[in-house]
Image (cartoon, rainbow, N blue to C red; front, side, top):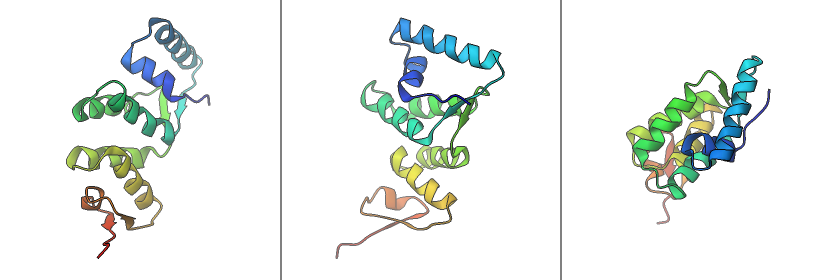
Length: 134
């Protein structure tokens, strides 16, 4: 199964470069036409969320919509998809950032809890626990 890098998904979502967008669409259409799904590593998903926020100014609701739509796309297969869905729900419901929610979801999926952190926001998410300095 072929895999996608972050920059391909960014072009597909943001549509800011017509040449790269067209190439990404051709690749996706060709793979789908051949009956292949495209693999998205969990690290690509994490980087995609960061790029959308940091480089393109997406707000939380926009990120939630983009990731939800991508997770439901039949032509894409996400690594650790269940943990990504849990992370998205934690992110939707709380104040921790998506990366922290994903760290917690992956640790939980692995049966390793709590996720110890110095991050007060992350520690508010079920499955994480704040390390006290005093």
